[in-house]
Length: 475
Length: 95
Image (cartoon, each protein chain N blue to C red):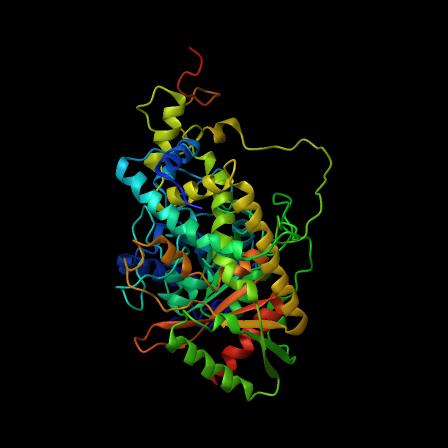
């Protein structure tokens, strides 16, 4: 569809004027308009065209950044100065950011072009992108199905070629699961690899920012730009930033662990068979070794995740009281009533449900039984991974137990919706990086994603493995 | 553990949320479903396990106490309709 297979090729073509950046951006804008029914964007930035002129000039002058001309869509939970930031919530309907998130500033500094902000589940809470004040997002592969969530709009924007790359956020699978449902690549970096400054907080000890792309090269390139310590986020880590792109082609022998617990009950048979076939095929390669491993506490990950993240969310979302921003209920003369009405009118159903659960598990008398208990189990889950990475380099699992489901199918049963993240939340609990890569389709033509996990701050090996596997599979 | 309608009403108050009768019923049912599911954690003996507060090891972050520019009062007031030239306005608290 596009005239290039990754950013480096695009940049080369821009340099020799084989592609015009202005035409390229215009084509994306036209396509966004044409595919409005997908509802992937909350806001489209027409000023991207002016930006394209400036960047094209820089390319011709030879003074351009690493991402010059890369057209990027941003999940609407990240701040860009003087642009709307709604988190797909009614309560932030009129909000405009007064500063720019560090991650976004880094993209801009490298001459990327921001084309708009994408739809998502309200405050990034959801697995289907059906919980949005802007309405649901459709899966471009089958419009009767969900794109996954919460970064559904960002996944669709890339899958439908409405931009080159997009940013999403991943608190429990919100990048990897929609990447898998839409047949593209999606990376959740190590917690602390990318600054969270300017990311609207959902669950602060889980939230990460990462890219979606059509290829591993762009994921590697953009990760090296996003990474690094930031004085505005004390949890961002001072640690070496490898040249992820250059390291992609390292030809090391890789030992991959297959956790038996991820291939048992609940996994769709077709997905299981297709992934098993890929493993059998890849085993013939002498540089790839597969070994069975165990992550015995993964069965507790969803329970642990929903206690801890809702607790953190209930605290983080206290700030939406209508005082300094947000849509205030103007009919109230009592302060307390004003808070309550503002929040009750402004938040959607799922957000309220999570605030309620979080408030409950933190409330007096239940704190130790739920919150402290879950923090202890979080350690057990992390230790499972630490033990596993003593034996293997990378872990391979399905990304999701099923392919994209029908719109509305899981809306009436929150617990069933939560269980769709059964293979992804453990990476956030342990703080490790994970990527979903597209490895085939089921009999309905719906994409199947394969998840790779690596130890903390080992994205280089994670991306190398992703590249090696996808290369072999497509050979 | 299970949660009663009264408790749900109490939690709503703590969370500064208001629900109608139907919603309280719905949330009571759903919270109970979720709480029954998370009770699964009690299968595990965690007596001697230390709680994990944060996924990545961190150290205290210190910096020099230097005054830096923050966002301006004007910018801070941009996102509300309820303000004076310098302050946010809220309903009267002291009567």
